[in-house]
Amino acid sequence: MSKDETGGRSAKDTHYAKLRRTYRDQRRERGEIPTPRDDRRRKQAENWKAPAVAADEVRLYGLHTVRAALDNPEREILRLSVTLNAAQRLGLPDPATLPYPVESVLPSDLDRALGPEAIHQGVMLETRPLPVRRLEALKDSPLLLVLDQVTDPHNVGAIMRSAVAFNAGGVITTQRHSPAESGVLAKTASGALELIPYIQITNLAEALEELHRLGFLTVGLDSEGPAPLEGTLSGKRIALVMGSEGKGLRQKTRATCKALARLDMPGAIKSLNVSNAAAIALYASRRFLAEATG
Image (cartoon, rainbow, N blue to C red; front, side, top):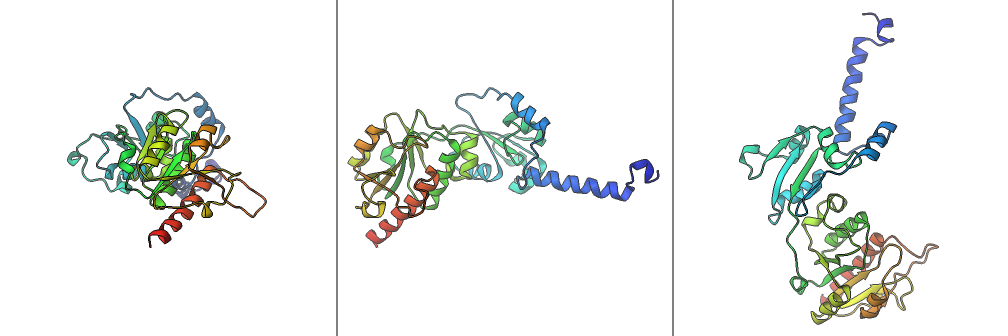
């Protein structure tokens, strides 16, 4: 067949085009480059309906998230679905030696299970939720983070990563108006969900009072706080309380906190995304605790 008959492309050109497409598809599967948001994909996203999942089941996805879950002895694993490429990247042993079923799948299978917008990187883990934790278990932690109805799972996941980075003992949030354990939360946390207690309580004011009894100074972060955070911190146990993305701290929460403080920002912008504010507050608190106990 001549070049004219193949649209001006030789067999060599066609071969290299296939190699480029294969390489590009592999990078997309690994999550290194985004999948083009063409009309067909947008239509798939609009038409996709989440399959029914049992109330006591969580679907996690993404290489870092799944690797951390597999390494967590507290995880009860139900099933692992993985592409051949993702299995190699996870370094999985012979599936026959694992105590849970392993299913070899195609990326399109996971798209149907998780939705075309999920960056699953070729792996999905079906598990039970992590065991319920109690506030009493955090009594020996010098630094905690409390979230007052922070609703966006992406923000909560990012906050959990910062909490782990600064060695906080736990993240406490409300059962209502807060994200439950989920694939989106876990993917954004990138493994942090397995490394720090995520405690959901029914009444935040009562939980703050319990933290007071355990010896914590509760500091509510508020852009109109009376003093900078650095001048407000005291003691050897601190619980930072962050408000929701739009409304900030609720009135009852503000009244229950032992102190209110602000993050001083000299620039033109005086407020930050809650996950960014949490990271700064954790850094300042960790420095204070290091100096106070050093």
